[in-house]
Image 1: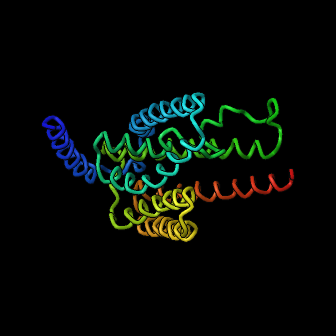
Image 2: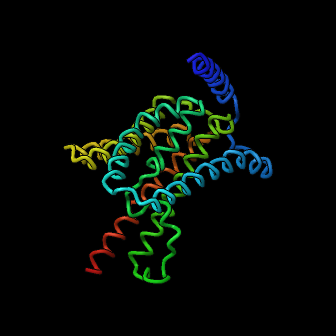
Image 3: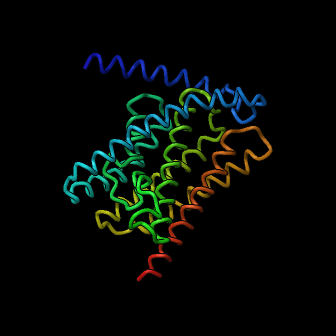
Length: 255
């Protein structure tokens, strides 16, 4: 208990220092030197690749271990529900435990039950029995989700280490993070058959997209990393939506 208290105290102190330093750090995207930009971005990107790669192997090992589907479904549902509080804790703190929990929730604690989980990218389309258009769309969606994990991890680590500038509007950032977390809450509610999951999903997307637009408008014409983050988020979300619509269409055509 003593060592845990000491570690928590040190972590909280380092968190305050890093956050105060992050606010004074100039935006990375205003860097004019291309080499300097690549060097600064390489650090969080490489660590995000390492962490996501480790969870990728872990998810693959979990699938090979073949636990009971019902057990995986329960853990998957709870992972969705826990993503909301974990995201808030992780984005407003820089301790290693919060970061680990954040990546764990992204990967559904290795129990993702979706047909488009990231490890599906190993099943390349147009090979063997995977020759339908639905297989291609499913593979692309899995790749798109994997790229999302890498992007989110890079942003999270870059903020912790003062590489990206802190958000200039904490309220809008809180609305964005909360909206993204509520989406996962709706998925968890749906997994356990709790009523109101669709309404929660609609509210979450309104909050998320509203925060995206507000931050972009507020930072437009300024050198701010969050302008690029908030432009990338709706692009990723709209691409995912169109991919799922295409997948549903392909499934209907093959029936």
